[in-house]
Length: 519
Image 1 (cartoon, rainbow, N blue to C red):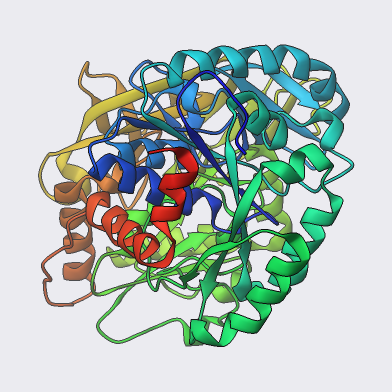
Image 2: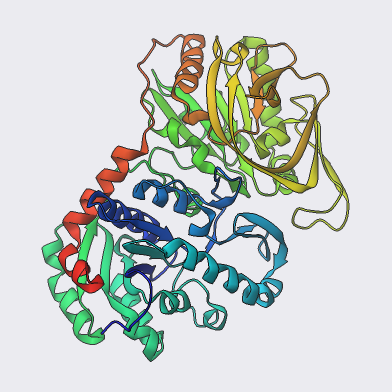
C-alpha cells in the first residue's frame, strides 16, 4: 500500500544499471500524461552528465531533464534537476546547484557537501511539485549500489521523500536483465523493496510472448509484477542524457570509430567527422546533423581514421587542456592541421569547433586558476594554431540562451542562429574575422584569416539546430564536393517524443500505472 504523503502522486523510473533507458521512459511517461491534459513535470534530484542545457534564466541543468520538460510542454527549469555533476576527471566534478556552479569537488568533498545539496533538492521538489497533478521522477545508475546507499539523494531517498512508486527498468538488450532485477531486489533493504511497484524490460528485440516463463519466475521470486516489455525503438533521434551510448558506439546516425581512412568515403554522401575527445561534452550539438539526408556522420579517435572529410567538427570539451594533450599525443593534432591546410589550398571542406572545440582551434589555452582537472596552479597549453585566438579560463561561468546571426562568410548569406552558451573560457581574437554575432553585436565565433570560414568556431551550442543555417552550410559543402543539392530535414523533437510515447503506451500497462498512482 502506498504510504500517506503530501503532494501529487509520483512515479519514479529507476534502473538496474546506467543507460538502461530511464531518461527516455521518463520522457515518454511525461508526454503521455501531458497529452491527457494532466499537469505533469519531471524531476531528477542529482544528475551526472556532460550534456547540459541552459534555461531562459541562465541556469545550467541536465539535457535529459530539458528534453523531459519539452515532453511535458514546459520551459526547462533548473529545479527539475537541482544538482548537476559535470565530471572533469576520474575523481572530481564541477558541482552545479539550482543552475549555478558552486565549485570543483572530489568524491569525498562532495559527500561532505551532500547535506547542503539535499536541502536544495528538497526545496526544489517542494516548489516544483506544488500544483502538479502528477510528477515523474528519474533515478540515477542503480539503487542497489550498496557502497553509495549511505550518501544517496537521488534514488530511494528521493523516492521516500516524494512518496513515489518505483518502476524498476532493466535493459534486456545488454543481457542479464532477469538476474539484474532479482539481484537488485535482493540487495535493497526492506523499506526500499516495498517502494518497488514492479518491473519493465527495455530494448527487447523479438517476440515478447517467448519471455513468459522468465517473467513468471522473476515475479514469483520477487513478488512484483512486470508492467510491460518495451521494444527496441529503431533510429530514435532524441538528445541523449550523456555520452555513454555515444562512447559505446550506440548512437543512431553516428558511425562508431574504427574505419581506416580508405574506407571512409561514400559516393553521393557528405562525409562529416566528429572528433571523439576523451572529455567530450554536449555531443547533442550534432543531433540535427544525424537527421539530414545525404550525410554520413562518423566519429574518429585516431589519425588513420580521418581521411579527407567534407567537414570536421571539434565538439565541446569539459577539459580542453587535457583534450589538447590527447590530440597532440595521438597524432590527431598533426592530422587536423594537415587537413585544414588541404581545405584552404583546395578551397573545399571545413574544420569547425564548438565551444571547447573553438578553444582547441586557437593558438593557446591559458588556465591561470587551475580550473581544469589535473591542474596544479597555473597552466598554459598551445592549441592547434588554426585560428589566431587566445583563450583564458576565467572563474566566472558564462551561462545564457543566445540568439544571433551567422554571417555570409559561413553559408553564403546571413542566417539566424539560436542556442546556448556554457563556458569558462574567454577568447580574444588576434585578427580572426568574426563569422557569428549575438543580437547585441558581440562576437560569438571567428573564422580563418582568408575570410572563407574554411576554419571556424563558435561558442554557441545548438548552432546546427537552426534549420536555415544548417541547410545552407551543408548546401555549400555539397556544391564544393560536386554533389547535387538536397532538400534538408526539419529538426523537430515533437514527432520523436510522440513516437517513443506511443511505443511506451502500447508496451506498458498504463491502466495499472494509473491505478497505482490513483489517477
